[in-house]
Amino acid sequence: GENVEQHPSTLSVQEGDSAVIKCTYSDSASNYFPWYKQELGKGPQLIIDIRSNVGEKKDQRIAVTLNKTAKHFSLHITETQPEDSAVYFCAARGETSYGKLTFGQGTILTVHP
Amino acid sequence: GAVVSQHPSRVICKSGTSVKIECRSLDFQATTMFWYRQFPKKSLMLMATSNEGSKATYEQGVEKDKFLINHASLTLSTLTVTSAHPEDSSFYICSAPAGVRDYGYTFGSGTRLTVV
Image 1 (cartoon, each protein chain N blue to C red):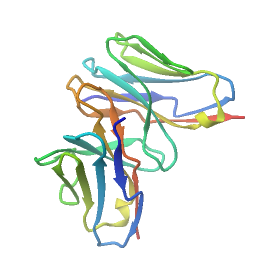
Image 2: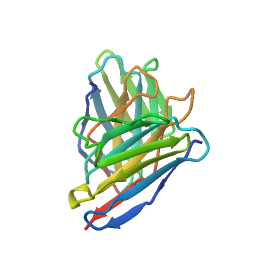
Image 3: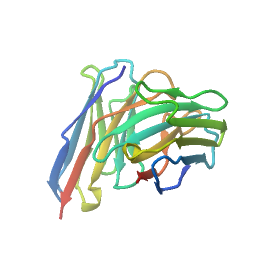
Image 4: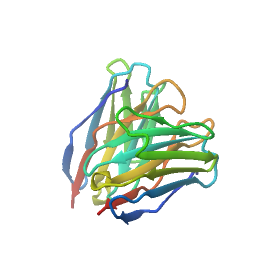
């Protein structure tokens, strides 16, 4: 089955700096790669996603890049703010629509004012 | 957008009792519901996939008789933790595909189960 590795496990940055979180996946047939932000005691919230036919996607301060050849994708957050502090999860889904998501281990992002 | 309402958000129960968690799709029909379990500071672990009108599919290592899943309608899926024990204490989250043509998923807000 799919295996997703996420790094780093913790990331600490100063407000205004950029943050980058990286994930690798094992199933070359995976076609959907979402990123989720989870705050304490809440369910995950989608912040950005990318499909396998796209190399990069941007939404204001957040961007995701996908390298299908290397089977890795990354989350980029620019101009970080204290409210960006949370746990971030990457995930990958195999070829079958509405299939199961496989999650990375999570990254605890702390943005210091 | 598609919303999944999950209840209760928190529940405390005594060992040996059963607890039911409900997830309702409010503005769409959820033919599939994924149930996850999350330990503190850990990732989401898929427990089972429920499909409306059929038996749930459980992931390896998940006890079917412990975690009963029912998906009797297109808007309601339930997870019942039977004969709960302290080790069942965890954060449980449901998720459903967000739409027919959409690749996305919508997640419930989670249920914090504490068994005492």
